[in-house]
Length: 365
Image (cartoon, rainbow, N blue to C red; front, side, top):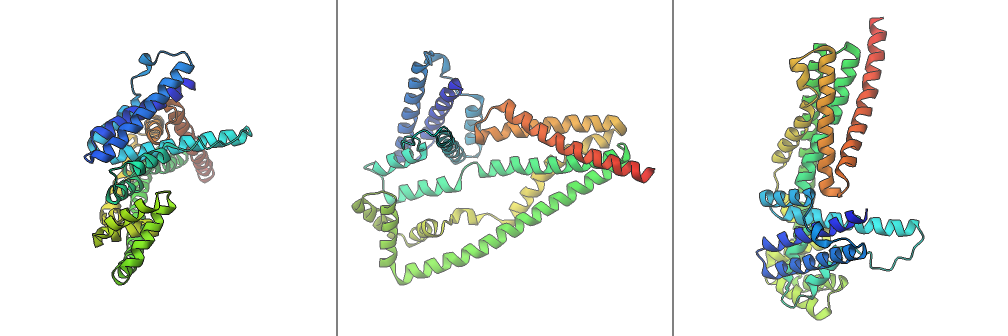
């Protein structure tokens, strides 16, 4: 466990370093470098306390390397979001453990996101535009697209695996399973796609109405909106003079001021509303289908008990890979998360197989 804590710090050091290297804004890049130094010092302190040679622990884990690869492909905003989520989870876990053991909460448990913001806000060269840009990235990222891909595949795999095993239990793995599996894949994927389309469309319509109201307020009472924005930054702990200057900088550009105000007041990120509902529906359909096709494929080539065993094996491998992928966001042990996912998936499939078998016996009898 102690070595794991050291590795977590080393991974954070490595990832902040990569964020700094790929950050075009010099001020924010400097913030990332400071965070990298902080994480490195934590790792060195932990290693020294445990009498562990730090030089032997300097390599980032597979998780950190994978996140770096994701950053290269999809952009480092994904890495920043996952890193922030991980650190927040760690901080919450520390506080929960102290509460459980009735230990005093000293305040040092506060996650590194707060440290990051403190460094950023105290930078002498930071301005309102830079802070607001960081805020928008922090809120809009977090590996959301990648997380959606993992969870979409998981939904398709678990639901269709359970359906296929239920039909297999009732029919002993005959061609009815293939028909049911393909029908389940199509029905589930269409349902997911339609649900995603409705969700995105309704959210956009609601937010667009709220955004228009905010624009009207900005045009009719810019002085009041400037004061409101300054108060928001003051409430965040920024010195009053700096907060007012930051608000004034932002208000020089009406469109940018509108973007910041809807983000700070309404919690709306305008960038997230630019996505197409149709694209979201298509992606949801594809991701669900990828997971759902795994338990069905064996029945296209085989039948009977052979197809059932191959389907179970393929689905178990898929479940393990999904569980392993989830650790990119949770930081948990790969084997634990992978086998936990396999266990839950197999239990669900076993239940439906048993019910299907009972129904099949009853009908045939």
